[in-house]
Amino acid sequence: MTIKEAQETVDNWIKTIGVRYFNELTNTAVLMEEVGEMSRLMARIYGEQSFKRKEQEATAKEDLAAEMADVLFVLICLANQTNVDLTAALQKSLDKKTKRDKDRHHGNEKLK
Image 1 (cartoon, one colour):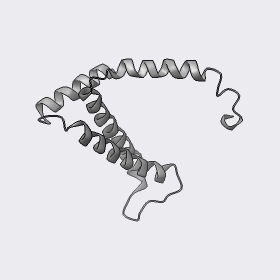
Image 2: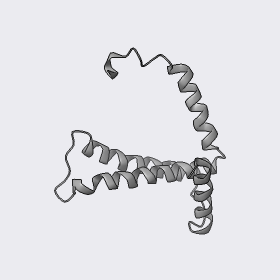
Image 3: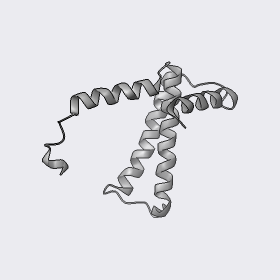
Image 4: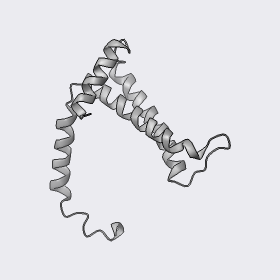
């Protein structure tokens, strides 16, 4: 699925199943909530925090994928609501980073 197709798919889902978009402020708060849930798992899977007894590390990576998908879904909702073409925005961001960082990281000893 392309980014454009994802934006169209989410828009169709919202209009047929989700009734309507939450307002932009609500979706921003929901996005922060979803990022928090993803961050919690990242801290336990890749960081130094441990899982609670009832949590199972075995399913944590599956849960992480689901949380990342939730973040993406809400971000796409916000893009649709604010008329942002995420394909064009991502390309613009990559172009900016390429120009700015072309030689920046090659000499970074921390990355070797």
